[in-house]
Image 1 (cartoon, rainbow over the protein chains, first blue to last red):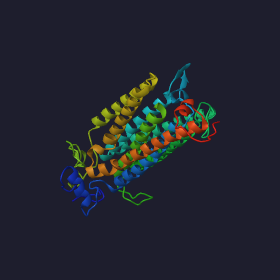
Image 2: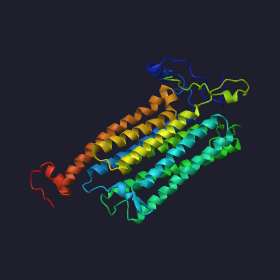
Image 3: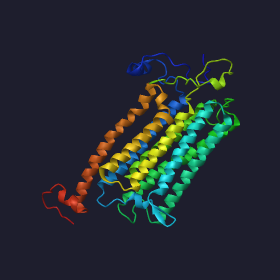
Image 4: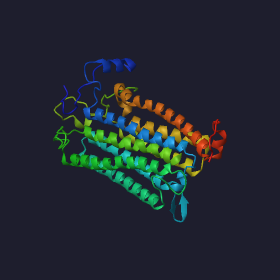
Length: 240
Length: 144
């Protein structure tokens, strides 16, 4: 039998394939998500609720953008940067996108090395992910500063529809907050990994749950979700 | 290979057989190669969507390209990076089906926004096109 601390759910029970399998899983008098650690299932449910929050923001943005009778500022020009005397459209946002994707890549490596119990590599990749995340937030702060200096406010801007500012600050601000908290938690998890908390199953200071490498994967889910949200923001806010 | 759902990957556990001979599940562990491939693919797709803007592709082609690249990237992240490809269907459906409800909100939002746009055109005379094509208002309506 499995040790509860190592895999909190034990073995997967045999069940039929496909739709019947779903019914069998849900109708059994056991936990629905067999083989899925408790923390992971809860993280997924949190991310589901977060999906609804971000979608509400993006759909509100769509609504105000369709309904305004004033032209919408052209994001391609608003977010252009002048580098070496040349104005390159949207370049900062493109770089931010690549940084966030790279941080997702390092995160997935951290999860992988975590399950291999390679403490040092897991720590390094977690820290690298946090550093890339912090870079992203830094660039976002730069972008906000630039736009505020140019006169963008939640109630107006020099180029067109006043809703541009409110949508921009709300959506990117909420996303940036997610990234910032992600960086904080990445550092906490990295310290736990380096200290060997996850090998010795040392209880966490807040929840008291025994440390396992599953928390690296749970952390990873959150981080990939932040990247996922950015994919949608990049497409519908910056490129549209 | 369709649903290896939660079963340890063949590569799993081999680094770690000294744990008292007990059999336990190692969580999501897959060869690193697939992650690097997806990582590269995400870079390519991001570059492609940036180029759509860079070369000023306009109209329906722009919409189509942007949305296609967006959905492909989202799909790859959820499927591989977030391991949905290897999870049991019970949790995959529990997480991925509810967001479909948002399509209803999307539809309502679009309808309402169109209506608001036309009323604004009619009552405030903001955009000439909207005022012309807006619904005819009977009675003594004061245009600005």
